[in-house]
Amino acid sequence: MITDTLTNLEKYKGMHKNLDTAIDFIQNHSLAELENGKHVVDGENVFVNVMDADLRNVEGAKFEFHYRYADLQIDLTGSEGWEWSDEESEKETYDPSGDVGFQMADTKSYGVIGDGRFVLFVPGELHKPGIVTKVSSSVHKAVVKILME
Image 1 (cartoon, rainbow, N blue to C red):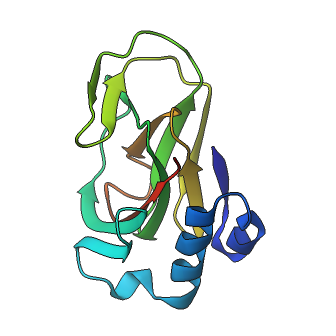
Image 2: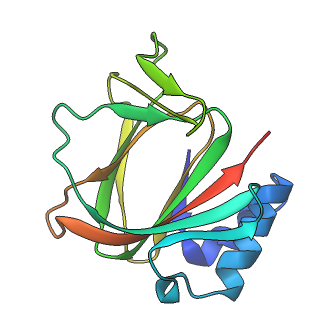
C-alpha cells in the first residue's frame, strides 16, 4: 500500500511498466472531466473506472482483495476513509472473472483520501475503501486498475 499526494505521483514511476502508463495518463488527462464508466487506457493492462459512490460505515464491512490488479484510488470530489490489513486468513470468496474477493480481518492501518491524496493497493493486499468521513457520505472517484502480472 502506498498513500501520498498526487503531486508526488511521478516519484513512483519505474516500479512497474503498467503503473508508469497509469501515471502518464493521470498526469496528461483530467480525471474529473471523464464521465462515469470504464475508460480504457491500455487494453486490459490499465483502465479507469469513474463512479459516484455512496460511502459506508466501517462496522461490518469486509475487506476486498485482488490477485491480478492494483487499485489506484483517487477521490475527485469529497473524501473517503480506507482501511488496510496484512492479516492472513482464509479468503471467504473470490471471483476470478472480476478479480475480487472479500474477507474479514483486523485493521492494521487506515487513512483518508481526497484533497489531492491517493492510495494504491497492490494485488493481495486487503483493503476497505469507501468509508464515511466526517465531511463526506458520498464521493465522485476514479479507480485506476493496473494489471501487475
